[in-house]
Length: 281
Image 1: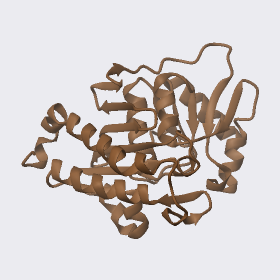
Image 2 (image 1 turned 90 degrees about the vertical axis):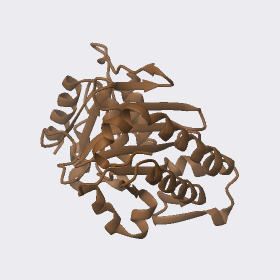
Image 3 (image 1 turned 60 degrees about the vertical axis):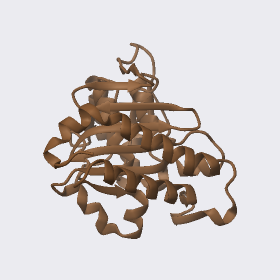
Image 4 (image 1 turned 45 degrees about the vertical axis):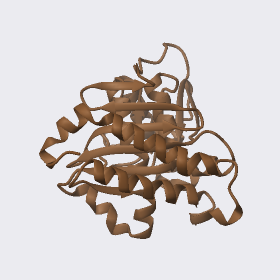
């Protein structure tokens, strides 16, 4: 363990493998044993039928909260399920202490339906800056790691997002209509134009990974929850991509963004998507 918050750089230089081990173990012990084996009493709704939580979410978050806090003394954990229970917990993202941002099962709806398109997301941030992230798809055993200024890796191999091929339709994953306001719906309509192929998004974490791999050109998301975006935003950045809000500013995990926003394979694509969203709005 490290002794002081000031040694975060040292922690990132030497202890990222410990975080990887924790993420893998959380999935192996709490998530995968329940995959395609969930009983009815292990699934609940939070805000509605598209916002589900399972025993796997809760147990994996509890495990990660304990382990991550011990790995980095002085840090705090902001987990999706803890924030649902106590919204004030989210305020730690604004604080001075290093903060672990955790989504134990990103894509819970897919998980519940037996679809392998879900992942575990962990990000380490301080003062609103994401320093490192881990995106693990346990049903596919794929792990992406990004460290600010040191690049992004998928299963140990460098990730480069590249740029869309000229003349090909731009593939953009967009927010589910249930999570958009009327103004955001109008903005997203700007993507329904020649040369763009919008589609509904799945797990946000896996969509970010697809952008970082150059398999998806961009996202267009309309919500700010840091546990959905922190890990992926850094992953895309370190793979060579960019992110912009509707105001033309980088997305901030601390909130107050003008929505929708995009993460894209390169800066030119991010600008193009924002221009289209602005035209729709």
